[in-house]
Length: 369
Image (tube, rainbow, N blue to C red):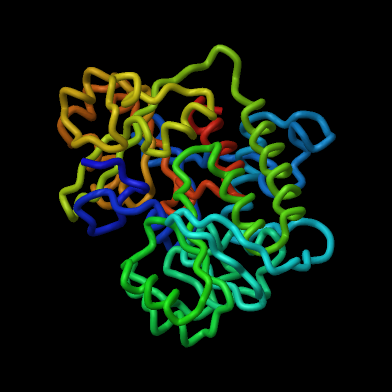
């Protein structure tokens, strides 16, 4: 099994491309701890997030607690909107020639009609301040600013005809965008297609932001956004409680498709778990692939304190009540205590401008703040 670039979507039988992890309809986080046994739940929340004013670390005010930061982060995600850079929108300085991850050198001469074929890339474009130039979206761009744009994907496949009908002057994709025939058709029509590497870990947030900004002729805005994101991530990590190192297992479950996987090295979640001051149970157990079929033996041996899941995955197995019936779950400390942290599918592995919010939520959720 090759390292997938994302977790699988609902109905999928295997982990597909990372861009597909953005296919979600809502933004929410639920922290289900021991209170779940009594039918209750509490949100793990707090965080300054992207441009939010929460008085947290790095904002010039008194450092906020993990719980306060997470509450602010949850409010930002519930709003499902982005926070562009301050000031007037940048003006692209073109033409530029950039390296494309498919081995090509691509020249972009016009950024008046931008079409990102990835939800995370679309978030970067909008946050850079170029949202009014975006002419369409793919199914993974679910934030409010993009919802009225015409969609150019069918399921998760790009429709070349739909793309070309929007007359884009530049298309942004990643190596998981497909089918390849559609990308070739778009390129053959004379449209510059800049292909990016998928984002699979925290460090990729800065790399991808820089590459998108360079391709659109706004490198200065890219540097400003990278600095902002880096500062917010640092502030979120500073809220990790001292002496707390919970062991966390990332589970990808799709009950309707009989998909039961445990995350390991390269899942994407491993990078976020580490940033939140916790230990990835799969990585510690020696799982050297992003996803490995879940077994009761692996669960019991890894002894996670907390289970991290996508919200739709938890729903697909009947919530916490159904989850603990899966062999091995009940025998773990997390299963016994019913400690499950969930994040909406498209947010958890987004690795974009809203990733600091994810870390804020994980710090509070995984450490029980």
